[in-house]
Image (tube, rainbow, N blue to C red):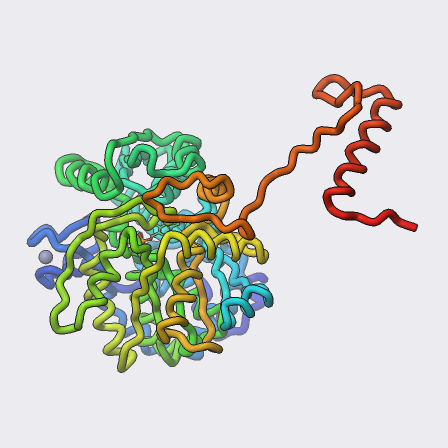
Length: 500
Ligand SMILES: *Cc1c(COP(=O)(O)O)cnc(C)c1O
Ligand SMILES: [Zn+2]
């Protein structure tokens, strides 16, 4: 729809101007640093940063009902910069002018209702939000769009040149960083550090395809993260891990979208998210709080983090009695939820801060963490996908988490859950294969269930003298014999009755 066709009161705010006063707020010493350059840790104390808008009060001057109408109308506008996560510009990164926004098709991923059979089996209605339908096939694109738009802004306004973006990754961050950097190839180059053998072949192919420099390191993600932090301390590079607070800012869009997709009625929902480095859950809590404070949503949903028993530092922390909680990193064991296989989440200080603020705002316990077994993750992913969904292993983890939460009473039967399927199932096809072929090593503790397995069946018709092959078409009589023999065999295996 064209701008002039919108109602007059909407037209005035349809195209947002830069606004707000963003600062890097240090969670260690409490200092504010202006958010007009790239900063990853507090220059005073080395603490973790969150970007906050010190002029957020202006947002409360517009009534919640008006924001809701504005965002809903904006969805009908054909303006690329406002078609993705920046649709929520005033709440996302309002100081970035629209001309600097990098939009590659991220955001507004579908919410798909659990198939009736699956919902029956689980016992409660739920939805998957398919974040694997982002351009590089994971939610990481949301944060990357914000971070790269900011870098693009610095390139234009501050003459930043030859930016080298760098990140450590369990696979998806590097895919997203390499994709967005390659779009800005004139001014940004990208390098990614991956733990060798700990990302899937599909994930490895992504930064390679985008033209990034790819380094494979011995160790796990936590080790790569240490190297990247060392490089960011010593050299002039742009760190694109979720330590970069712009990433977290972009990922807040997930919660804004859920609000909009449920007509801003989210109070009775339970949102399930896998936790790895804890950037995503931080962003979801922060985003929900922003919308709540601006009166756009009337209540705060339950937020449930899910961790595998093989990488569960956040679960371990919140299982301790509140007065005696101490945070300890864990040593990870191999996990099929490989994108979340992290023992020392960079965003843990952010989680601690935001959970406290969130529960204070909600007036009671609204944040939970559950732990699930590797077996439950795989079984849940395969079950979901056999019922019409496209869940990755981490999406399976979300579903396993919902089942656990129902079991322990965090969620009651009849409550509606929204599960984050954080990446596309195709990225993790190897884990599906390993399940089908009993290929898991003993460390995973996964015993494949026959009813969830599937195999291709090779049809080798007997008694045929000629078979089709590339470049060698069959003679008509051989073709007829081939079709008949193969057709008969398939009909036999499927138990088909002949037409009468
Ligand atoms: C990065 C990632 C996660 C973990 O998210 P964090 O923000 O690190 O907690 C989960 N699933 C997928 C597919 C990911 O790429
Ligand atoms: Zn500080």
